Amino acid sequence: MGVFSSADRDGHTHVLYGADDASGLRAIIAIHSTALGPALGGTRFYPYTSDDEALRDVLRLSKGMTLKNAAAGLEHGGGKAVIIGDPRQIKTEALLLAYGRMIESLGGRYITAEDVGTTIEDMEWVRQETKWVTGTSSANGGSGDPSPATALGLFASMQAAAGYVFGSTDLIGRRVAVQGVGKVGMDYVGLLVEAGADVLVADTWEPAVDRAVERYGVKEIPTQDILFADVDILSPCALGAVFDVKSIPKLNCRLIVGSANNQLASDADAQRLAERDIVYVPDFVANAGGVINVADQLHGYDRERVMAKVLELGHRTTEILAAADSLAITPNAAAIRMANERIKAAINRSGS
Ligand code: NAD
Image 1 (tube, rainbow, N blue to C red):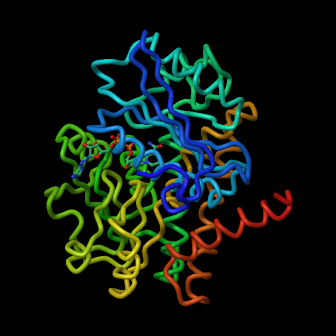
Image 2 (image 1 turned 180 degrees about the vertical axis):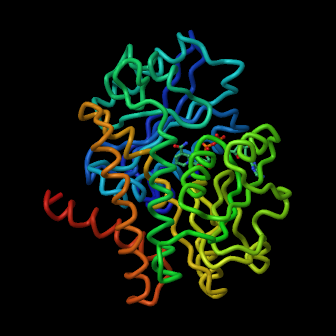
């Protein structure tokens, strides 16, 4: 991969490589944009098979955070970091402290948080070396686990989209299929059941399904069937890339709203869904509750303020669906366009 060509950079402004021989740290921090404010995005700790793979992933994720933060109405640009290696094998306090010093060297241009392979406890170690970290433990005044905020935002987004698609936000008797009842999916199922929806769930981890069935009386269906269930609403809350040229023809729903990141295998799949008359709410809009939660810690965490902002994701969803209709584009394209307009306006204001 080249370094400076605009195609290879894909709009990124900074890429920082950090290594610390004493602790074995090898990390890359990518900043895609600071037009709206300091770049915000989590740290992924993952056993990448090559440095190139790690670089590609961090660039992709960092660009995604620019869109998510802009769409969520946050005063933050997009950034992301990856630490290369198996967290179960190489994660130590010394490594996390070295990583904290790497973040500190950026002087606040990048603010980190937990992501796949890192935890709230890890962020407490990072915080010993830098204040540019958020999403730390609620026991120490931090924002804690973002999942309840993500679930609430997902519910608000889904309800707004249901109003748009079905002409009513009333969920009584509406059939909803939820793939994955983990931290987000489980809370979301609770909100759905409370609202009177008829919920089907599936999870590859049987204890999670058992808990959902026991707690909420929902119906379990086999994991291979959940995406194709005959339902009104489908909510992927497990994995990315679930919608592609193979799965889309087999779907049996009218509306898709879920928390899983990167649900479309490619942007072309947004068009494929539209051609099947299925409304797809972009994942980076529906699942922004988590980043709203961690961002709030930077202003002294206030749960009520967070919940109010998270509920605004409902209005944002309605706006995006209306814009998609009036411009005759997909909701995915409309959301990207609205996020980019916010960024462009900020750049014009700052004159840079
Ligand atoms: P989680 O790991 O707690 O839950 C995911 C669940 O999906 C697990 O119970 C897992 O067993 C299940 N699963 C995995 N593969 C499956 C499959 N093929 N079929 C059915 N179930 C399967 O994760 P989470 O924190 O609940 O996040 C869920 C999704 O939402 C992820 O894609 C995550 O990136 C995204 N997300 C989460 C947050 C958050 O605040 N936690 C914020 C934004 C986005």
